[in-house]
Image (tube, rainbow, N blue to C red; front, side, top):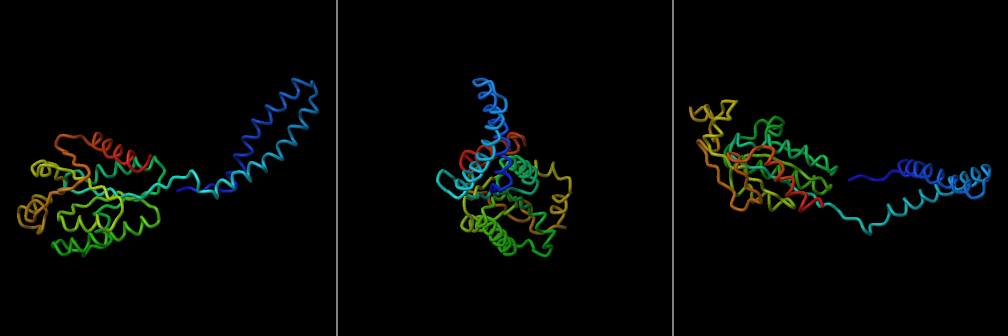
Length: 241
């Protein structure tokens, strides 16, 4: 989160005193008709109360009473390739950033570019998901929430993620495979169907639908903006009040 710095407290104190002192000067002049007395009283008040305001702010910064900690959460987007995970997750991330909470975006494409030899077998994927879960857990230990998007086709790997991280919100972006093929601007479905890509979820490897997803959004029927609003509303209601 954000910490109030000394300079910010001082500037806030000065800005407030400009308003308050001007009011004091006006009141004294109005009742006594002496501008010199009004200005002198205003100057003395300004010096004393800026210092008092700073001390008051510092004391309240040290007190935890009345403060509510926002528990870090993890939004886990899962679904068939080209079901809309990255597009929707990116927009959700942009919306959640407006709340000014510590937040990081994790996408499978970015991770695989950093670690290109992860592999696509069931064992490789499950091992990889545990690495991602460990990364998210580390971020959460530092009060950072995450928006993660991975195909994550196997139930056991999603279960491992849920067990390792706190406040895990599974968002299943449901889409008919024919719809995903139509969105296939990369040609990956064509390659998988021709046998050039192995272990491709939904074609020559399974995609096991989540049984306990917090949110299920049918992207065949729900537009991107509507889906984003549903997810952001869910997060705000439960974690960012």
